[in-house]
Length: 484
Image (cartoon, rainbow, N blue to C red):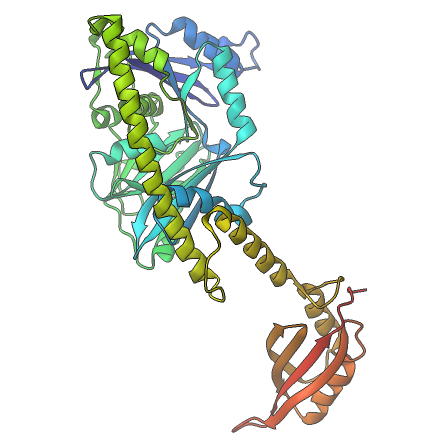
């Protein structure tokens, strides 16, 4: 089978066609197109549709399928840690975990992720998020050009994980696309961290050094110990600048040999035009998709049964034998699939039940499996509301309004220090230190004037042990009225 990998950038597009035969990979074609070369106007550049049309007309050998590398600016990167490792459970829980950190609502987002096992049963997740409308637009754009993609892959992911197949336990992958660099941290052949940043007009060594160290510091703070990678593998440069010949922030920089990492062999006629840097991303995503390497992707097209039959029917002795073999395989797959699905479903239900009981310790029994997830969502929603609202009755008072009322009501020269506030069942308990008992009494009288409070009681007051100030505890009953 042949597959063409394509990367579109600000400057142009690069395409690499790879063929797989008997397990071996062979590069059969490669071509680059620049936007400014396609435009008839000096100040204009070609759009993506023109680039794809030019690639389709000039690429000497096109694949049956296409794998596309998406630009770094079209995705958002987030990290999370979850207390389970089952992939289906992570798929369900990850959006709710990341929702507070995302700049856009969950609806319409596409999420892909890579995980690694940490602790006792936990998973460290690197999530890549893209806009669904933009991803669908990309697919339609390629389909209209006669290049319907089999894979839409995030920038730099395929390159980094392809390098990890032949590298040590811990390294950094630095991929440059025009004036943008993507830095990927890889440990034990899994993604740990990924971030993109812009390069200045000069060689950018100071920026690269700063970004590398900022990444390592952030990673070490999260992991709880200093992380020491072996080296940095750089890709995307046609020729590595002399400034990168010396260690970057005390880490040696080497050219990323993507062609050697994939194990692909160049056709003889391609060797004069092949460039190690510009074709790296397109080569990596093509080999990744063609070989079935399990890399995170935003979208992957399955192989249709009709394509399989059309490709392999000549190897079967007769049409009847082909149908019999397919029928047996489909039946066996269906039986195994049902058993496997039942087993996995039971495991997920067990994990979710344990998660429910550990999170909501007040419940002695978990709800039935059919309503378990809906019940968890409802309890989480109630917990969020309770963290925001307080008070009684139909009109709820926001916690922020209570804190604002206390801070604005108390006189600025009042010698009182609040050390703790506890909210429970419509009552707010305030603990603190005061210069004398008169300050406590003044605070009580001032708070009683607020419309948010129906009563203020001094629960206790005593002189601080070994000091001159008074410890106090005041209980405030909430009225349930909204702040004016």
